[in-house]
Image 1 (tube, rainbow, N blue to C red):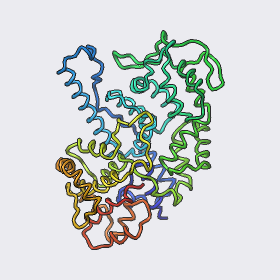
Image 2 (cartoon, rainbow, N blue to C red; image 1 turned 90 degrees about the vertical axis):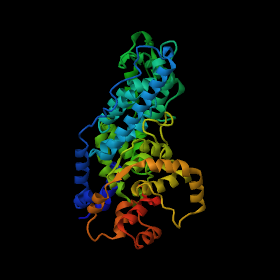
Image 3 (cartoon, rainbow, N blue to C red; image 1 turned 135 degrees about the vertical axis):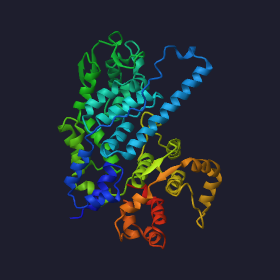
Image 4 (cartoon, rainbow, N blue to C red; image 1 turned 180 degrees about the vertical axis):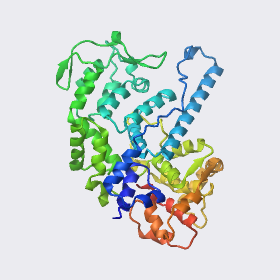
Length: 462
């Protein structure tokens, strides 16, 4: 039995796509076996260890540093940020644990955090990775106690008599229940419960500051007691709305931007019954017939990171200059560890506008064709405007791309006698339209055809 279409879809959603050689080996596998192997490959946890020094733990306060020392500190921070970004992109591009990294990317956006301290960012990212397929509640408590989150949402300033509501509000609005499922009074009472959750500025470890904690009675979501932070998280997760909220986000990430209440409620039933274990929930999704419905195939827009990582994996790309990958991320609107705000990247169709689509469609030829964008005979007014505004900046980027593509391996993976149309069907998730079929059936060498396929709007979908 040939399950190649379903397996291709599974890897597009649970990972970053599948290569010719892998699909050829797996096309006769059952869906159940494919899902089992996917989880097996992601059992190993490869923690990021790029940033080894917490340069924000200083012997002297920042305001006592000289201008030269401040400049050096900023340079050191920028260097760490680049190294961390580059390390994660490489791991996303090379790991066999595709599902774990795909889910780490999901939690990275769910618990969006931007603090400018790469050591803390790496620690938070490794918590996402460790629990990406584990227990949501465990992850939630650990995330809430990281210096990154305590700093980002101001819980460091949350003290009795002066409660700070930032963390309490986002905990409910963005991390668990969703807006409309709690009151302003719940936010206030929750904030009181989290007073004293802080981290030690000298060594960056979590500590509970007993003196800053409000020990008074609180009433939260209809329950009254002398609550602390863990109690609040217990009450929130005991509320099934948390399971519904998380499953809605996961459905939009893995299945379809348009929520299906029946399927989401089925997911929430599993998630809640399994005490917020993520693996049984994902297995339920990947083994459901509706996951493979035509309407759920090739309908999601790849995020910029999914797009770049997918290219890297499919064409075995390595970069001699990692700055280029950060430049690509900036250009397309998703720099890892730099979400725009506490709500994270909105995702979905917001990834694409006229300028980002233009960039995305040029990038494959820029990267795969040794940095040459070929506009021969195809210049449209949009292209001309794009060229005029971006020529200087783009040419500088192209000169610096220094990407190595393993064309020999890519072409060797394609089975003999595969037609251009079959290659397009493999590389594109949506069904082929007439325009694409006509384009790929024109005479041309295989390399040129493949670059054309990767430069279509359809290649932006997964």
